[in-house]
Image 1 (cartoon, one colour):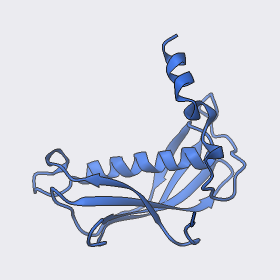
Image 2 (image 1 turned 60 degrees about the vertical axis):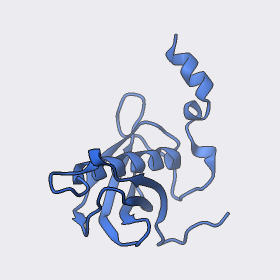
Image 3 (image 1 turned 135 degrees about the vertical axis):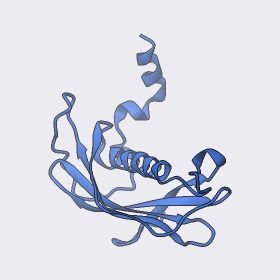
Image 4 (image 1 turned 90 degrees about the horizontal axis):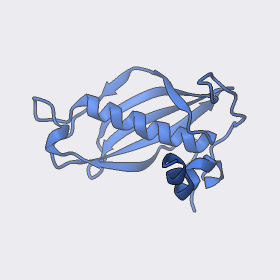
Length: 151
């Protein structure tokens, strides 16, 4: 398996722009796009830090470069740029799948790792992994998770 270089964003998630994603102007609603990015970033951080208890702490300036229309397919990419004691920082880009035209960039998104009481907690990581070993145990065992919910 190939891995990205230190400064290369990996585009992993794609969305098909549907009528319910549009604003009054007939283009992609920015709020929908930000929700998708926040969710994608949270999943990425959960896997990297091995904890499903993470929260968005900060998003820097959001630069809407161009727009998307109904029927377009956009892809979201993230790149981890730093690990703090309790946090992880990344940058994001969304682009048109076919034209590769950038739609949005966010230079800095910070997530914080939390303990069971909802307080910032050290995570102990300093590098990115493409190994699934950091996925939280509870998330790796869907049968046990569903059984636990039904108790």
